Every structure is written in C-alpha cells, then in structure tokens.
Length: 111
Image (tube, rainbow, N blue to C red; front, top):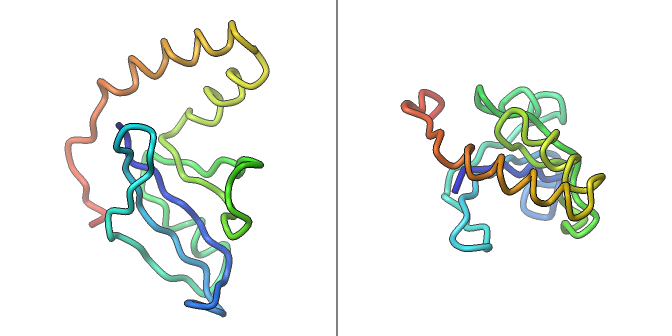
C-alpha cells in the first residue's frame, strides 16, 4: 500500500516542535518506517511533505495529537467521495484505490 505522512502537534517528546512521520500499511495497520523530521513551526512541517503528497484533515477517529495526514495527491478527494457517497461512494473509492495501488513512486529523492 502507499506511504502516508502523519503531522503531530508538539508533544512531551518534542514540546516546542511539530513532527512528521512516515508510515506504510501492513494489512489495515499503519507501521512507522523510522523516517521522520522535526520542525519549529506548523507551516515548516506542512512544507516538508514530499512532492506528490498533500495534507488532508485528520479523521475524528485519529488520536488527538495528529494535526493532519499526508496522503498521495488527490487522496483527499477520494476520501470525501467515500464519506459523502455512502455505499456508492465506497464502491468508487475501492475502484480508485485499485488503480492507485498500481502507481508506485520510482524515486524517493526526499530521503
């Protein structure tokens, strides 16, 4: 599955900083990759997302420390379509996911 980035608010570990961490999915569970960066401001953290990703609002089910989630560009529209479309939205979401999974980045120049 595709990678995603999670933007965290300041915490005990980094009390005056915002942190973005990369995750991948194994089944339906997010797994941290160990890649992360620390930023002094929210804007700096938002600007650090790799090319090809965009920030989408956090879900109500996300832990409170999460500010936003960075997903592949266009993913926010897919999620909105799913939420607004009910069962039909789920069918369209799954069709888009099937296509999106086939698209893999060829180079990660942001490592």
